[in-house]
Length: 401
Image (tube, rainbow, N blue to C red):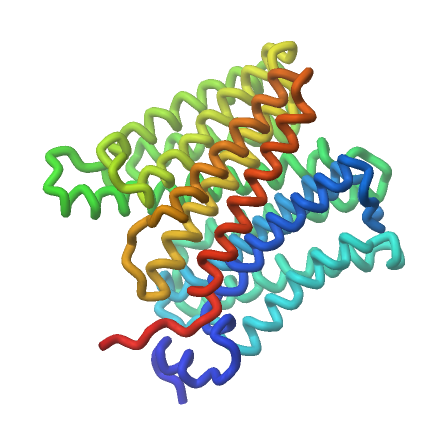
């Protein structure tokens, strides 16, 4: 009987891909992020029409927010929860089935026009529900009550996905509906919570080795908790009344609070280490997104709503997930925690993609060109991750000498 994580992995004789949760979900999440962008560009060029019941913009928004991000969330949680609870990870056939459910959701929604009403949507929703059940079981068995808040956010994310599908079925423009905003809000809070733990901790460890005089403040102090409460309130306003001036003012204030929080983590001292500065920059898109979103509400003539949302959705969500995926893959596959030239190119390509996508909202006369270049950089970044890190994710972890 397997008694340790290593024993359980060795007992699995199938593909190495299913020896740990981060492997299939990080790899194929990145593949999907690149492929879905290719399909989106093809739709923009009228070269492709997917047999989906969703309009093309809503499909595009859904497949990044609830498709790609659900895979990364799963990969992160299935890897982190065993560390939180001291219990065995999900390995082998159980992990393969969970991955198959996620994959089925992507195919089902891309072809949902071929299915009876509600079937494709049910397949899509099944993944988050099953994942939530697995995480709940582990947290309860491990009595890890501290991390129940992560499960609550996953539940909110699932409700958001359901709301998105209901709005689309009723003929509403789901790409700008309650479901999308609720899903974005859930992920912003996840990054604020989890990023608020790992960014200062990783930075402190590295700076301590460099014998730095100033170290980041420890995670989740009273100030951080107050920022989380304020952020929850601001996002609740944004979900419910996104155009109200009070929402705009509150988001601007919350953005300023997150900037102060980020400064306290001493990221300026970590500019020599790409694996660290990319985490700080990824997190920086949380306050930047709040500030831009708030300004777009107060001064809508300056920036479109979709342009503002992409600061969060492409910037914070895209860059932060890639930052976590690269670091976690290196660490959990026995590699040195060092960003090589190819990894740095991935980071810079994604940063460029985000900058150009936001620029397209500011200069609509050049939007078509900027969209295309941004999309190509996005494909290059995620495709590059799949190619470069795929070899690590597909092969077993080297045995210790």
